[in-house]
Image (cartoon, rainbow, N blue to C red; front, side, top):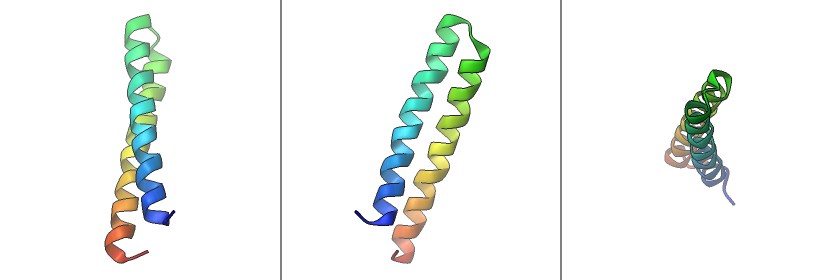
Length: 59
């Protein structure tokens, strides 16, 4: 699997996982879990964008 594809796939996975954590934190009233989910979701967005840039650059 190409590096760019791997970054995009992992980024999407972390976005989904972070979103689930964020929602679970909201529903259970646990602000730390909600914040952790938000951080992971945003990190996933960045990783996915890095994969897209790598793809454009041909890596």
